[in-house]
Image 1: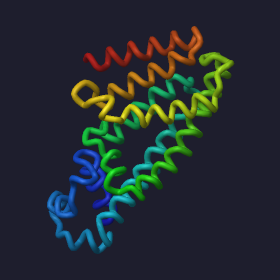
Image 2: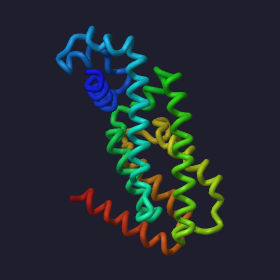
Image 3: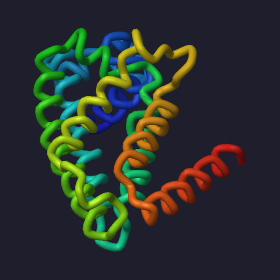
Length: 205
């Protein structure tokens, strides 16, 4: 039952937001009593913490599986983007924003884990791209890693990028294109443009 509660809570939090979904909502959706949920989680804060940490572990493991030697660095980033967007349901309800505002301690813990994971992933990707001749050899890996992490969070600022003009998927796609075009070689650019065109063709189907 505990895993079923986590699964349903994760689905609802990502669709409707961490703040918006109550324990009553989860119980009603599952057809169980709220008391049953409290047998496994003492309060909503505990449930939110378990959900966010499990989400982080799921996404981290998925990224590790994507980062295989047979994939080139650019393909790797495209696959990671699609995987994360799928797991976060394109952040339709801005769950991370709600997490930051209403559950700051949980967000801070998640933020630290996320930074370490993203730094590891981006550094490895940059080195892999340079070695394969897809990224320019003179790039400053530490600097680009910092910029990448900062921008991934900056594009979620609704005061700058409004929901009316930019959905989360579009922002992620635009930023990935911006990031790669700044560092690719001619060889890398050819791969980037091919993947971008495939993405456009897929979305238009």
